Amino acid sequence: MKFMCVFLGATFALFANPFAQAGASLAAAKDGGTLLRTPFDKGGKEFQVGLGAMTSVNNHGIARPRFTDVDLTLRLGWMLNTPKDAGFFRGNYEFLIDAGVGASVDGPGDVLGELAILLRYNFVQPTAKFVPYVQGGGGAEFSNAYTDRVQRVLGSPLLFNLQFAVGCRYLCSDRCGVFAEAGYRHASTGGFTDRNLGLNWVGGQLGVSIFY
Image (cartoon, rainbow, N blue to C red; front, side, top):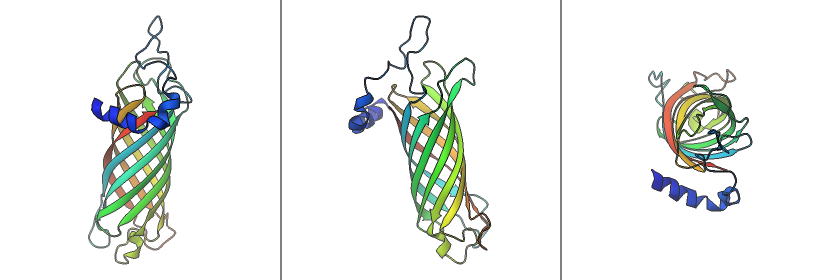
């Protein structure tokens, strides 16, 4: 795991180098144990790359067939506040722009994409290596599954997107981490087409986080 973080950190060296000396190590502390700086301080940024898969639920024959896809996700996040106080709910809010592209491996269509805005809450404990989070948001989704006239799930190439996920990062350093995430996603036309049963996916992904 540490080797993967070192490798990915080197890959993004040109991107992250101007910030490499900013702040102290995640584990560095002042007298009394207060952290000098963490990746979750207000104004900090996070770049995530994730790879995963999702499959549909509530499948009922040819009118509502199974959809399964493999997805690549890119996210850019901004820390909105610095974690303060104490207790289990200590943490901060993070605003993210989420973009993804996927390939269908089961069901109608063969390509899909999505663009969404997310709000995440990070559960940040001082010096902790594991940082859980919950997030939700929505945006737009594209799928060419609408060209299959038999299915009644999606009736348009452009769809509304709602999603919710829970995840956890493991911090290899104050600049690099890996994460695992499980989530739910909904896509539909919002009633603007006659084929609008809607698509509900569940799945997960693994990836890497770069903080700067």
